[in-house]
Amino acid sequence: MNNNNFNQLIQENGLPVKMWTNGVPVDPKAVTQLQNTAKMPFIFKHLAVMPDVHVGKGSTIGSVIPTKGAIIPAAVGVDIGCGMIAVKTSLTASDLPDSLQNIRFAIEAAVPHGRTTHRHGRDKGAWHRTPDIVDTHWAHLDEEFKRICDKYPKLRGTNHYNHLGTLGTGNHFIELCLDEQDRVWVMLHSGSRGVGNAIGNLFITLAQKDMQQHIANLPDRDLAYFEEGSVHFNDYMEAVGWAQDFARHNREVMMHRVLEALSREIPKPFITEQEAVNCHHNYVQKEQHFGEEVLVTRKGAVSARKGQMGIIPGSMGAKSFIVRGLGDEESFCSCSHGAGRVMSRTEAKKRFSVSDQKMATAHVECRKDSDVIDEIPMAYKDIDAVMAAQSSLVEIVHTLRQVVCVKG
Image 1: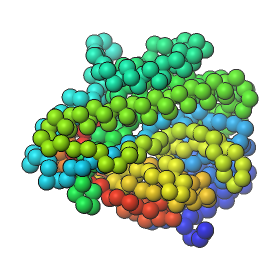
Image 2: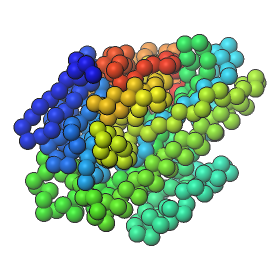
Image 3: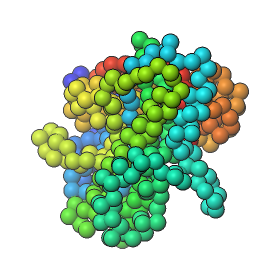
Image 4: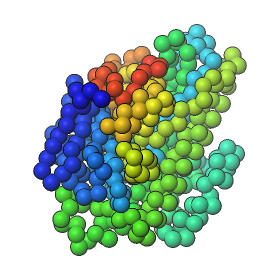
């Protein structure tokens, strides 16, 4: 591989950090966070850093962390299994109505989204009457969840069944997009919802308790880890694997509901023409790299093995991409999971107004109010620069532009 594709940081008492960030801004705080992670004694070979890199809680978003003999729960984080699903339909732009507002309303009615912040009363982001498809998918998850709850009873009281097939908040979204041939795609982004958050927080706390005597020696308390072979390591691997399955089923239920809603709004019958691309970008799994079995934690990164399909969304109002992996071993066969933020949500709300949001999303049927300013396109890196920086990691198969966007 041509070494010009990445920049390499070498530090004392730490393994190299290889960064595919040419032409994109990188926050110095993110570099410090990466260097801290690279100092951990169980990192395998090097860290790989994607062009959407930015500071995260626990570990840097846009990083690929290969480990041997240990796992860092905060590196996976609390949005376990967060990822994307996309399908291409037989519809074209000319099949869509002139006004897309009713389609947005139909999607919003079909999939619970957002969250009611006060504790009393109904949460608008959860099911109150679950459709049959939720039961069908929950049947694949129920038995193992009961086993996990036998060991960790606290998880029984979380939102699990009533969050299956729901969107959530923040940067989670459902979109209708058009590709370069004006074909209609449905794409959405979500993870393991309330139960994944509870599993993540539970095991992050356990890791910090287990390491109480040593935590002062860590570069960051969020780098607390479980050693392979320990009870908590095995329990975490089981629970995180389950949460990743939940996230995949969650996206499948939502996709089914969105396609149903679309078929009610568009008179022309249609089919989905491409098998859904359903990929995680916050997860951990065992993989073979450089001839050895390692645990690979992708924190805001997508697997991009040779020929493997993936999804790299831009911000609302920017382009998104369906990509094919090139199998670059130096990156542990990975690519970015999106554009990556250039500023915090708080900073975006300070800096931009509703009129800025309206201007930036003029071509998209979406909410344009003060609650979504933190998702304004200008809060993100330039997706074209991000794609150029990782041209050795993936090839672009389709370029999508949003026409409808539903946010939580």
